[in-house]
Length: 446
Image (cartoon, rainbow, N blue to C red; front, side, top):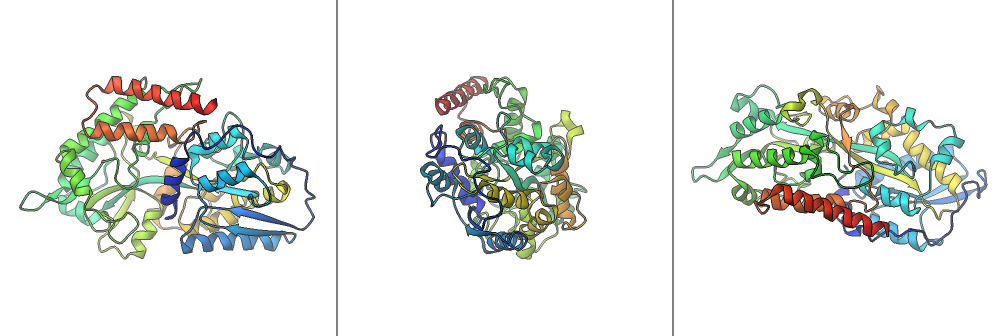
């Protein structure tokens, strides 16, 4: 995940189920309305904002314009999902033609509302076989109910960063592969001062920490959020209870929620030089592939490595899996230059050389099968860990929903209460969580 994506996620979450409405301000624009050879200017809105990210996007667009002389692209950076959705609802000349989002959970809304155009006719017209080009998991989070309204534009995978020096000091020879090993190693790695306060925590599972949103670790269980009819089934899935119980055991083994939470509040900003893993307040930490580049740029003073996140003990054969998400790109429903817009979307998402160069530039995971195998990819082994996670058949992404990421917000709120000991009856709490998710889905559909 690029640095700027953290800020975007907050805006996207606030957008919620009510942000998108059925139907758009403009009627459907046919994919062949514009002359594919006429000079045209496209507007491309994206959410990246850090200098290195925006340069990478601008370089990508410049490469596109050199091979598509009749198309000029006006690039607008640092656009939140909320701003983009408001513009697409209003339509008009100021609305974008090509759009991108960091929030895969919103794809269900984009597709069902019709604000992002169906890309299947464009794929078919230009001979792009999406099943051959993109990994299945990435295709799953860019479509909804068989409507392909987005395509993957790089991906993120989550794994374990660990302090090799701390491991050596504790006599640990390799990163943990199962949850029981994670708990054992976390205890060995935890260090306290003479007054009993923490100097270092082995692994902090608290859900408010940086990238520790509960859905990320939950991916190690391969959960099923919804049944085939779209009804929430977290209470039915034993994995939910196992996941929350395991998180609680990790907390208890290292001193309890209260002390850990107080220690967490001493951590610096996630993307700053005071990041808790960088300052060695954490010996192990779950994070995305971009963290490695940041550690090198910050000249970390300790040896570090990467590995897949541990898996439940009874699912040891799935080790190597992880949580996947990423950026998605599509065509605005209201665009009057959809043929040209498709050429840009196809270049950014399908062209192997472009995908590899962009992935290397911003240190994200490539989003096509060919790019994942490219010898031109960054060969750093700590980065390759995340490529392997992305290729692992057991890795999962969040399922799209008509209420966007509201069901994830509901899970987060519930998980905060569980870890703080505020849910005395877990089974009853999970049933109430399912009811809340179903009510949110019903409201968004109506």
